[in-house]
Image (cartoon, rainbow, N blue to C red; front, side, top):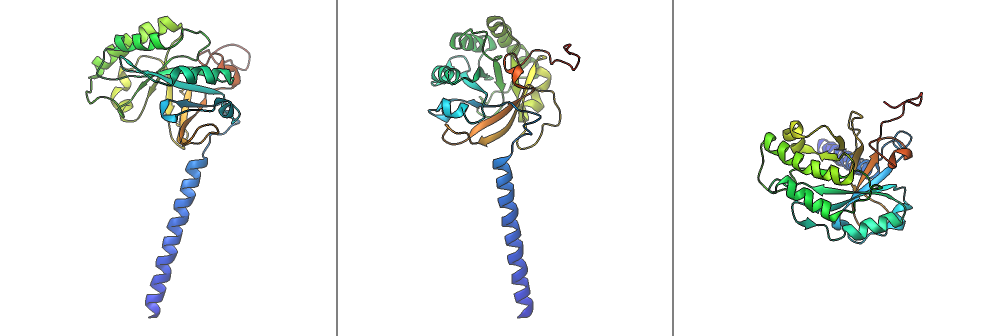
Length: 245
């Protein structure tokens, strides 16, 4: 009987330890935030999935910029893009637009969709092209095919907006297509841990973050550099002697 009792105690202790570890891991995940001394500028990326957003409350909750979904493929336009763009701007946030790149439409068609949807305003953050497998069509182009289609997208978009684009390439798509992407600044995704390098403009560090003014989860990001880079994130970073790198 004593042996059974000791075994039960050990089992109970293991269960309690596992519960404590799980709770600690959940709290760490929920509360994780990069070092604000090192990365002081926080932002979000949103689409219609976030529903109606109270942008003044967002702006008051330590959010400085928003990258808003504009388009997908050759003809889809996010139904809340225009409203989100106008309201986020009015709330004082720096704003930009992103396009979800599909594998089943020509890059030139997708570029035209983006150009027709997003205001040609030089004050916008650089355009972003999002390339990933999740939510994409099942067709998988070769590296050479994707390189050609991405180039066909980037050339007219960058000409229209007068800025180099930023590329968001993540997970399995990054493993397959890293060599297909032209030399552009990157938006990286590394949840609850540092990416391990500084070769990025935006770092998406949370995909289930919470921000006042948004019901439910939202992606959280930081900008490489300080507040001055919000005006032009792709500008060369000043060195200590005042020159540009």
